[in-house]
Length: 353
Length: 271
Image 1 (tube, each protein chain N blue to C red):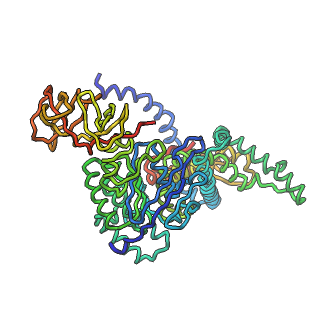
Image 2 (image 1 turned 180 degrees about the vertical axis):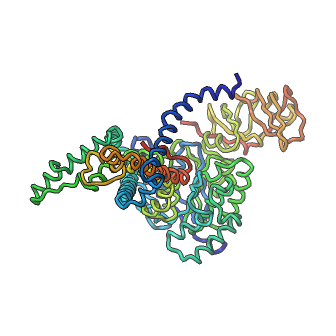
Image 3 (image 1 turned 30 degrees about the vertical axis):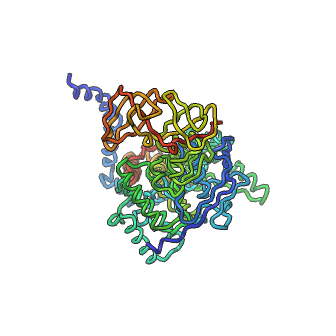
């Protein structure tokens, strides 16, 4: 494994935008620095520009004039993809149907003129790394979805790329397989120490895999941060609602208190604001006796999920609040409850433009 | 009436037509072929008789050359037309597929206008070099004519196949370091293989059996359809022409069957 590690370049995107010939702007000019060895996730709904960003880094799209892409200190903007030395994993896997598994994995080496015996050794190494032993001589149409995904990954990593680019690599798989491959992929990326850029619309994937996450929306970067920063300190309503479940409440802030229809919440050093918007994560709201809380509401529904129960509480805020309560407490629909939220858990968001 | 009987009744017209216009004439043709002075050995004459054998080889070589040239030209054109959008593209595609509407006689006529004794090429070469180049009546003229009406069939098939190509395959190959040539060699051409077999078989069978163009041009070319025609109408040699017809049919059919087995059933019968 050490033979493969340590090939990560740092990637610098400077002022890269993309406007298509028909005039639509897929990506507003954006800059981004990716540290060597880091896994960076581009997260957002479809059409947010994340794939365009990835394709610019890959060299499959050229940025609008003024944009530059650098690997370490080398300007790659004008270098075509075949000379960028990247590895790429596609959502469709794009495995060559006219080649066997081993030929697919070895293709990048063969094209580079790597000696046959060296090639065979590297292919064997990749096969072991991705757990696909015994499939070497299969044709692609004889593989399951999960096996194809592994072959695609092995093929991309076999050339020891400077940057590994993954475009929704798990999206085509069913849910349970996706979860398993996600954690496998995670440990593989850690052990390779490779610079990886990972595109997904799945926030759970982004949380697990990313050292940092870039949340994108409508062709622009909405926020960059570690998974914890993105989750606990979203900078705007879009990020708050896209990543995890979020209650968005509205009310006036005065004297460090956010006033809501069902009472008030204490805030951490918040400026006075006649119409503030704040986010509260469902799991940060505690259910207490009505008399013990400054914010009260009525339980509208209780859904027992197993590891927790999801309550919907009305009357407390301007819209029903979702509360993830422990599975042990006993509440029923129609009951009056008190809600306790620590000041740190209430995140006041800037006003949307 | 049971469901099964209903289906059989619906199929009855097909059975009648097939028997009347296909099976019976074929059986008759077989019988005529074996009924001449040579007997059953007439069927071997296409191989054993030197003149017939030379014609057969001529025809096969011509059809093969047409097929290969058509595949090369039509693949390049088809890839380009499917992958690029430019003003006039629709008109160009319409023009390229235009020969589909022409009978062989018209194609032959066009070749004569181009390279015949009064043709364009002859006039130009006569003016430039003083020597008139005329090749319309040679096997090269016939080759050009066949090329002309084979290209549209192949282009349309190739374009449909290119449309179905996963562009991701090419991008994956490029990301692995493949040059544009290597991408074509390792990814695009293998993926188009079935389309080549399918459309190539049609081009081959058409070129084997085309008569109109040959008849218009062929003053000194021997191809099988022409041979059958002359044996039949001029020499009134019914047995031999029937045997040659069967031979031509069997060869064309064998090629199609081979292609169909290689490409998984995508081959339609030739026109």
